[in-house]
Length: 118
Image 1 (cartoon, rainbow, N blue to C red):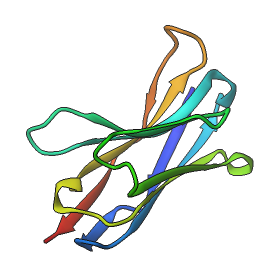
Image 2 (image 1 turned 90 degrees about the vertical axis):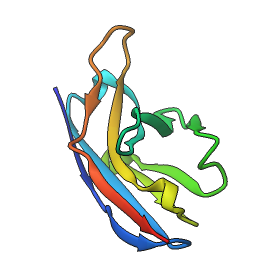
Image 3 (image 1 turned 60 degrees about the vertical axis):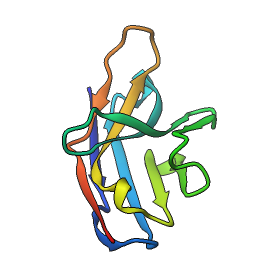
């Protein structure tokens, strides 16, 4: 089992910045990547950014150039630095841990609300 604890959400004005954190504990060896997804009201959950243990990253087109994902290996923590925030970034952001083995278990955090006011 892997436990994910998120922090860092909140309310910010458009153009502002926030940093989300996600700390992983437990069976870290069973996961190969961590990242962030988001879900806005009435919409499906969508990928925001992911980062593998090897350092490969993937970003949604809508956040490229504004968001940056990084990892502190010693702390098993992934960060999402969000700059130039827009009202359309408002959503619940979920931390995700993807399995090393195909078909393995995926883990989700409890979610943290990000609200960007115009």
